[in-house]
Image (tube, rainbow, N blue to C red; front, side, top):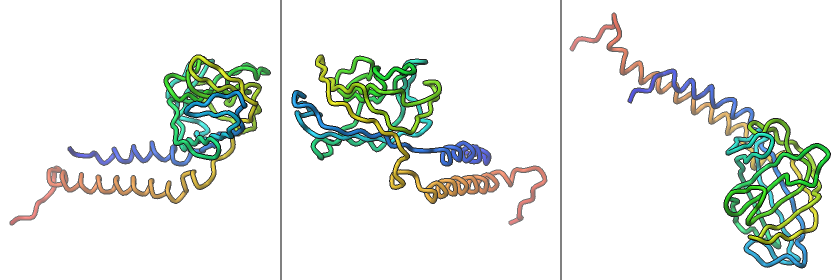
Length: 217
């Protein structure tokens, strides 16, 4: 299959805005579970817990519902219990619309199994102020400190109220953010692909161009 010389150029144009515009944010929270919290695959009574993940400030959206909820792509998810990383990966993370001046509604859901709707089967539910601005189809995550007005553990049909915590959204550490040199190498690689494709195209089609001459044997 012949690669047209303009195809890599289009790839470069499409990729550069992504390289330059990516702004990863770190979402984190921590606390201690209540003495009445059950022993589950992700909780224990009186256990310390912490979680964090990265999400772009203008994230890629897996699904959204206007005025209600969206589920973004996230990376570097970490969850620890009593200081021990559990190596768990959520089935879904959802950001929810919260009416102004109302912090007693679900704003962030982290689900270990299935769809992360308003009724979470297994996971964590945080009630706080809305964590983003703009429409759910193209939101902007907002840096800030968000104290919760409610924090619950969802264990199947059972819900356990937990001590409140604080959701914090800050710039991601530089060690996890793409380095400028890495972005430059990515662009250089695409430029190299474009040059290679152009040379191959000229080699394959130059002899058939009108007016071209070919060396005689």
